Image 1 (spheres, rainbow, N blue to C red):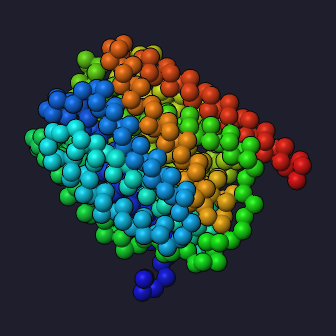
Image 2 (image 1 turned 60 degrees about the horizontal axis):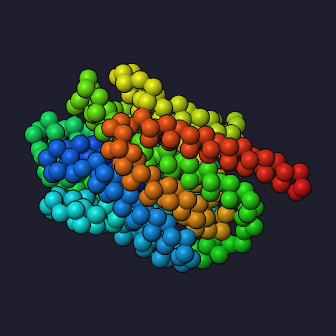
Image 3 (image 1 turned 135 degrees about the horizontal axis):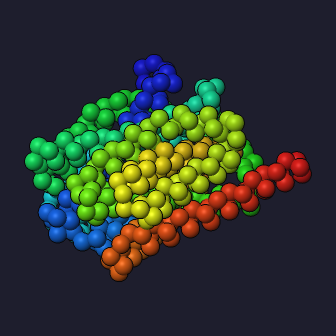
Length: 391
């Protein structure tokens, strides 16, 4: 129980810190440490992709759980449980070189990510709507960009201090303590029963199916970059050792992007803004395939960072607003398609890279998947227009 009502800035700040814990450390720390684990712990490219797939299997399991749970009390309890668990599983990565231990950490890390992304965002969005604030999640999702910045700067700092892969995982777990306290103290309160059970017509089935398809494509584009951005840069002879800087650029581009995409959506609408974000991300994905230059690698990282957070924020806020009775549950259902892509894409990409000796085929495939997502969004726009005519 909170002694006094929370302010909007506290709820948002607590949610931002929760995202740094459950995504930035429990998930994103893996990206800058992947090359180090490959050289020091003997982790292969295919196994690296498999661990990422295990992580997203955990994430999808968490999304299934979030889609199933009706009780607002339990939704908040599981969200709160994910906060300290994120630190424990981050430290677990340093326990040894056994693949099953790493896989357990990545799976539980996926569950933590679902708690922060789905349960947390649903609780925050519901609180904002009940408190009469603008129902946008851009500020909340600044935690994603900040999580990338923390993981990149942490890896750079600990690497320059000479820490090995195990020391860096433990360092990230200790760093997370700074975010645990505000995330815990300013956690969103349990929604009142009346708000949790409010009736809502919800979006049309066809619109939801089209958004499921688009979000699957978004998940594919997200996970390839989230898993392999550093590795792609490190593979280029002139850029060896520069991977964490590219990852830092992703975070620096993502952090202010949340404000921009909310403003774009006010002008173009949610789906119009999503179309623009998909197009820019597709360009960013194929740039490293077109050129091995430093400029192409860094431009791709910036475009990815500036778009993925907008796609997540706009999609989840859009479906959450259309389902005010239980926005977190609606978001979780949509996220199952995102999670399906996140499970399948890294493992397939790892094998494609090993078979071809290059990331280029996987990047071109990802660009094509994003174009399919744009087609689904255009169809969803038409469905919305048709609904307005009929309504």
